[in-house]
Amino acid sequence: MLQRPQESAAGETGWQQGGWRGPRGEASLSDVHGSIAVARQAKGWKRLAAFIGPGYLVAVGYMDPGNWATSLAGGSRYGYALLSIALLSNFMAILLQSLCARLAIASGRDLAQACRDAYPKPVAILLWLLAEIAIIATDIAEVIGTAIGLQLLFGIPLEIGVIVTALDVFLILALQKLGFRWVEAFVIALLAVIGLCFGIQIVLADPDWGAVLHGFVPTTRIATDPGMLYLALGILGATVMPHNLYLHSGIVQTRAYGESLPEKREALRFATIDSTVALLLALLVNASILILAASAFHSTGRTGVAELGEAHSLLAPLLGAAIAPTLFAVALLCCGLNSTATATLAGQIVMEGFIRFKLKPWVRRLVTRTIAILPAAFVTILYGEQGTAELLILSQVVLSLQLSFAVFPLVMFTASRAKMGALVAPRWVTALAWATAFLIAGLNVKLVYDFFLG
Image 1 (cartoon, helix red, strand yellow):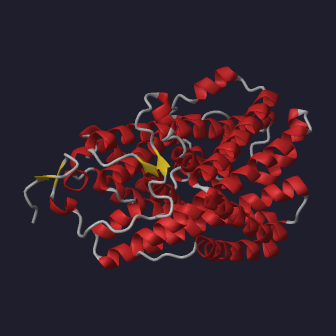
Image 2 (tube, rainbow, N blue to C red):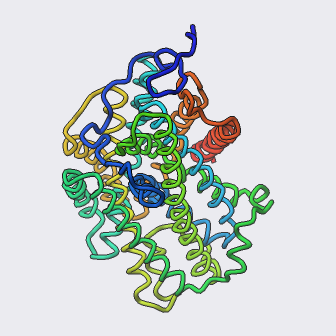
Image 3 (cartoon, rainbow, N blue to C red):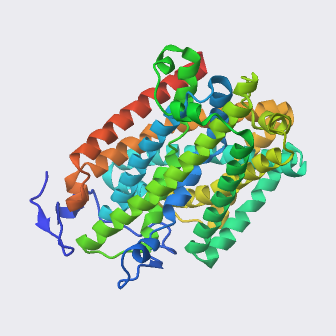
């Protein structure tokens, strides 16, 4: 039964116990929690600068190898027409990630902790298991993407490349020991390389910019053409990643923004700006992949290109520049390394938040990576590149299955005044979030149905 609202020390109105089943426990990622100072005297851009970083770690998940595969297929088969879907899915991502920041700043909990403190233990354990499966599926995609990048750049066989990917764990953990800002700097630097690589490739491809702009306008053909609809669903279903929701709600709390209501409101505003700008940059990368595929493949009649290796081999003769495939491979490798950093952190947040169990980061990461390497190595040895492409698609289906189990709790928590107090999400935001949640659920059900029966 709800208690009467009472005034907290922070000056905000909330329900007794904050609307949660129990008190807030120790923060996840406790070694970096509140470790980045926010200068009290700074104003404007200087103050905003302290909050820049988490959004870029989140943006990494929106340009993983699964997104590459769907964007390549969409661009090669349908030209620029599916750019409107990339734009829509990005707006959905911006909305959901802003809710993650709101949950963290208002309640002091990441999404995993919030699920633990809101639901009975059996439900929380089930959600934890689903989240772990999603992280393993994400890691499989990273392993495959990094291994393909190593093969394309250095000629390392896929079977060896899959095993070599275990070594990047130690790079990320070394950066984490230096401080969280080093992890953020590493990710932002690689994102800059990815953006530069695609920028050069787009210049070489010289697309029809009028057609590109027209592609951002939705067309009824998407609903009437079964093949286009399927790829549109794939782009939407592979965009919002479950682990990103847990990740963002955890790493936002690395900032020491204060406990008063005005400080929290300011932190929420700056965190939202950070994630929005970062995700718009992610949109540019995803759109660039689709534009490159449309310009290089669709316009030349090669409408069946969907595999990363095939796209790499065709770029040089089609664009007339030997550097084009190298840039493609460098960008793919950078994406794989970046995803490793974010999956490491997401894994820690999920385990510590749901079940209050801590492992040394290198132990946690090696266990997860080993579980991911085994199926990737097995499929690669038996079936080669074609098998890895199919495993990549399967990993996206697994992520689609899990996604709603993260999105629905997020929307429910941020819509609850009992849990969020004065920082409860506005009604119009909640309405858009519910529409997004049901749209994602419906699209993912369709994806899974087609995968198993179609």
